[in-house]
Image: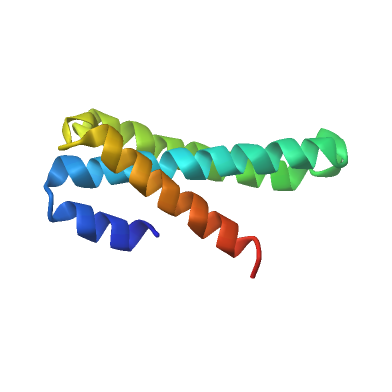
Length: 101
């Protein structure tokens, strides 16, 4: 999802590419947080300790990308809110599909 999104938004300028990054990383971080909550509910912190550490690190890495994109003017993209919502919607669809295949 990330590469086609970045290529498409890059045509709209650097800010749009950064907006794409913010949107994608937001959805991915939320997805990781949902996975973390589910693991804690299904066995607790100790039972899934190693997996929780890995997922938490991945989530933190995604949030670094998110924060970097904000620092590089993501919110100055043309129609930022609209663009962000469209991209987030696409990410949710991609996650939904990946959970079913």
